[in-house]
Length: 337
Image 1: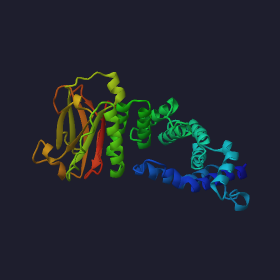
Image 2: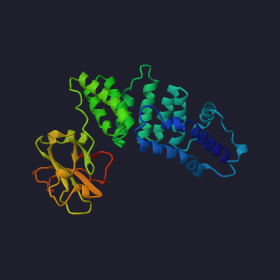
Image 3: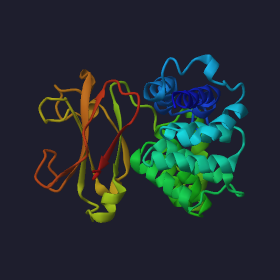
Image 4: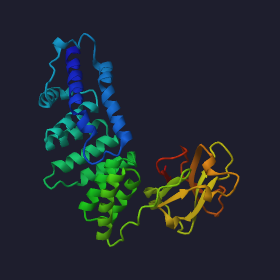
């Protein structure tokens, strides 16, 4: 049993070496550094983790393990040992290798097996949806693939590949307005080069839907300023009817300090979703400046009374604590669980 387990370990480790770079640099998004770093780290520790689970030093004797020299050999050996995979990672390796070899149907089926073992993993869900589209003669995202993407975004609302693919699926379904809305949050997340390309796709979708193209992108925020994006949780918005003229405050304040804002802007529910910049000009007190802080806490609040100080019945987003200067927009969601 030890020899068999060691062989599975060695095959998965070898396959990881052959396909890791291709998997991490899979098409479309080079703009998700944290996810990429997590995948690279995962591949780096995969061998150690599997060794801890199933291996022994004796069982890993080189004489006991047939080491594959090519991706095809690794796949063939993994196929013979796939019933012994200890978790979803072996299926991820096999599915990724199938994709690299152009075996779209086998990749689709292997991703489905990975999903059985990791049903809430956003990366696996997005990859499984992509594999279904690649296996389709028309490269279409079917209902099952769309369901995977929706589940991925529920697990990780900032998952870029899932959001991008869902926009493509909506475009394929003849829903250009929904596709544009799905893609638009990505503009604040991806690099400038990809943003130009995506912005053109969004504008085309909006025009097809009878909507105007997006306005020109706002200039970069000044030093010491915060860019904040505020939106309503879709499930909450569907359950609760809010007055369009209800007041929305976007507030930055000192962490662990008094509740008085150092910067605040007032908007309405009808303005949501919105993107604003908080800076010293938004400070209610000249002696307390946003630019003077090294760290701030940012929240959004729907106020029934119109009072910026919290009252019973107000709805607040989850506070976000951020170090200054902030290099990325701060996302706040009202009504999220």
